[in-house]
Length: 152
Image (cartoon, rainbow, N blue to C red):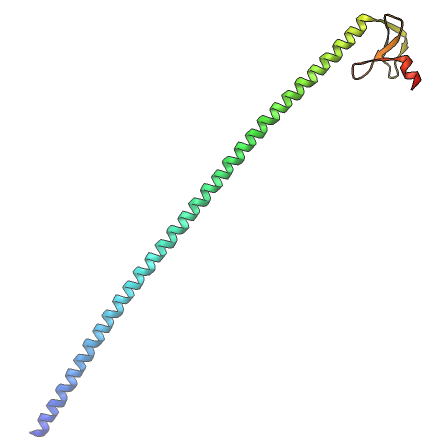
């Protein structure tokens, strides 16, 4: 009977130890699952955070790019307007100069008679002034006397 009792005792100890081991194993598995879930959640949070940062960075870059494009477009329009203004100013100056030259030539023609027998150094019309001097109108619209050409 002692043998049976000691066997039963040994058997009950083995069963108790096995149950303890099984329960311990279950708690380890449950703990591991919990840790795994927590790590997954943490990784998801970090991924969302990085995604948000990247989206913000992209938005910021797009905003800067659009601002630069708008600035360049504005600068281009300003340059175009300035070029138009310069062109119209130059055109007005040229028109004024042409008008002045034409007036001088007209005044010179009215003041003196055309001398068809002589020509200027570049084939210009030669005029006779009120006191008998011979002159022509140069390319700048100024009177140039023929006697002054001979002296140079």
